Length: 462
Image 1 (cartoon, one colour):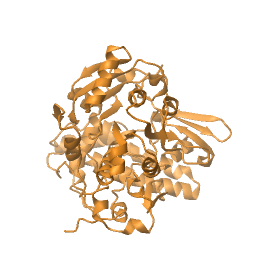
Image 2: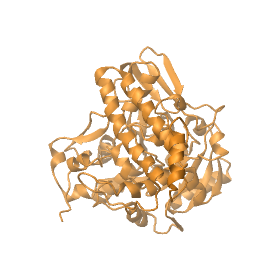
Image 3: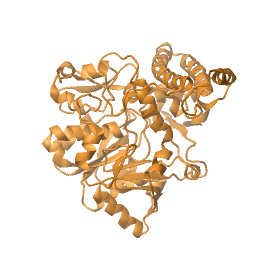
Image 4: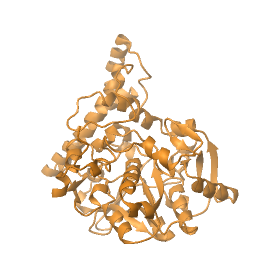
């Protein structure tokens, strides 16, 4: 069996996450597809090579997260099937201003990056910033000061890629940290394995817990539902922070070309339920890493009570590298960090829905017929033991993901936003009934469920 693959094959198999690592060498570029996803393009993307097959984070021939983590953290004292190898876990926030105030959550991502910079461990940080006028809303840049770092704080649920900043790292000597979602961090590890320059210069990996990647059409949907023309949107804030409201009350906020702003809470949007999967990148259906298991330290939101009620934001932190552990221990002793140590079960519970989607849900999706390349995951294909209603939840999520791309594109082409918004509301009515036992369809499904007496887990879980 040939172990050579091309980027075009990965794209055609719906396994491309758009990380841009394969385009960072200069023979290919990154471009938007019809659905608002970033994909590699150019003649070089059709060339099949074993090097690319070992580079792409969704390739069946690339090293998996367990293998990467075993090489990176051989002395980590804890091994958990959900969190991977780690030294410690924590919940809390940065006490040292202005990190918590400037971030979406507890400020820990920017603080660790800034602390590495202060101590001379790194010269720059590769992370996502708001775009310049006339450019995409967000993109990777290299920050070389604390001020630049804080300017890029907050959550960005938007397609971005690493191609240009990796070229910059190759051109500019120094030591760098990368901030990214799990598949991006994995892609950087795979790139370092092939490129000694990157291996020497990228020294630290800071990971972000991830539910899934959205397409750029998500911003169009915000605009349509907030009564704005997407062409007039100049800036987007996905999570407008308000210390007086629960942290899990997300607010979409758009700045328009005339300087005016519009905003609305996500729970008033047709597609505001993250778990339903609107605008999800197809590759996310084949990811089994929730917490960036290959990163030196990973950060998520503490989505459990009482932390989710604290509008100031609270992080959960999984530490894997000894240096990061020392930084955190010293800062806690100095009162600069307000962190409590917790166990792996606590962290996993804060991301319970994500783990169900990436464990039970992934096992079920791997049994479905699929075109093109079949991914090889750490989760085995399995449909047995999952009740019919739970299976329908996973099927509906996948259908919503596919349908949202197509319906939003049709709405944009025809300049009729209601085509998408109306479809999104109808799709959610079924998803809500299946998942939460709410709405007009719920009694019908509940009656069928009682009649069939399905086996398996609790169908009320998201």
